[in-house]
Image (cartoon, rainbow, N blue to C red; front, side, top):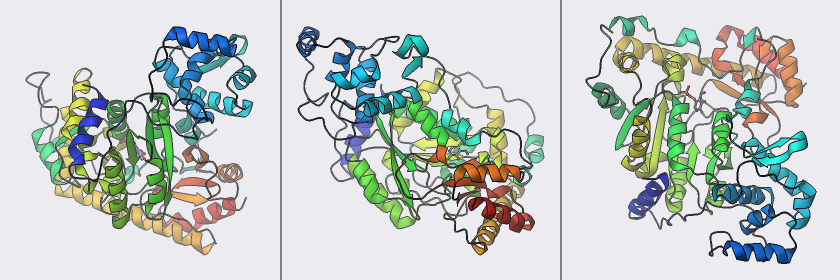
Length: 505
Ligand SMILES: Cc1ncc(COP(=O)(O)O)c(C=O)c1O
């Protein structure tokens, strides 16, 4: 059973409830203007190899690999070319290790500008599909470890600052105490067989009771990143389009690019993703839409109720699947009211316990339609099978023990006060920030590099904004992400004064 079978079944099932849900075509979507006179790949049968060879010969191709690319090139522009190369690799027409001609040659033979070819090569290099290596030239990659490049850039800092506000992490002092939960663990639980239920039934019941909408299947995995990895592995094939927010959580972009997905950014306004931009993005077949319903990292924006409904309708009309990444979970001040509440049949919802209960618990719940979750669980059974039930017992205790619940509630209120204190102090110094929720403050600065450097000099670490950005031409200017959840209220004025100075640097 493939993830794409899942897509089609869900599209079919949901077409009954939603307005016409188009069947997802076999080919992934494309972006950019169509190339005049070129056949859209996947819209007609490819000519047999001999005919392709004849065409190349007629066209005087000195590099046969270009025929394989041209056959699949249905849109001009860098992304169109990059996808043509990806499809040629996926179809087996370009073998790993195949050498690509020099950029100028490709540009001349495919009637594209060298700038376009260069940009396509950069996209392919970033996702690890090609490698450029001195005298060996540029070649189709032969495999190798994926690289969390954006994530490393976001967290790159030469030396540990005195006050590190770069990491987006919770305050260790605000996490619920573990001693009570640990004291309740008597003996190490031994499963009767390795095929036992992966989730403790008591924990599953607690999770379901607090789920934002009715859900068919819920399981527990090793954190929200693990959940995203498993769900996107099921839903996304090489070359598929996936809609994300702009700005976006960098590891998600790294993950999607490592899977060869086309990342389609939709900008945010104060209420969440912009509906018109989402509607435009969904005009082409899309494998999934990944959104953060509240306390968006990095902007702190929580999707409003009316906006959530509008987005849900667009997603249902497009017949695609929504993945909600609720990473702030119980420390978010706003309620969980993402678009998924309106379209539970096509929503996979992820709730992390890292920010609220401890990043090293490595626990997140993920739930959604049985078709998607069946694939996720089936695939996981082939690997580690389940997340330790010992840790599940710890989480169950933290979610049900009244003292722990009160500690998490107190943490939520403290984060909200800390955020409000820095926001107020910044506003008093002429720096207006957006967003309302979570531990991070997306802070506008005149020049990102100068601000990061100035703050480092003052002993404060922040994350540069650019690794979060996907749309280079979107308005908004430079930003830094400041984890204000770590700033005690008594330090708000001092930190805001340094931030305001850096914002003007
Ligand atoms: C938006 C978002 N998604 C996922 C994660 C990863 O969460 P976890 O620690 O549960 O893997 C984070 C962590 O900061 C996040 O901000």
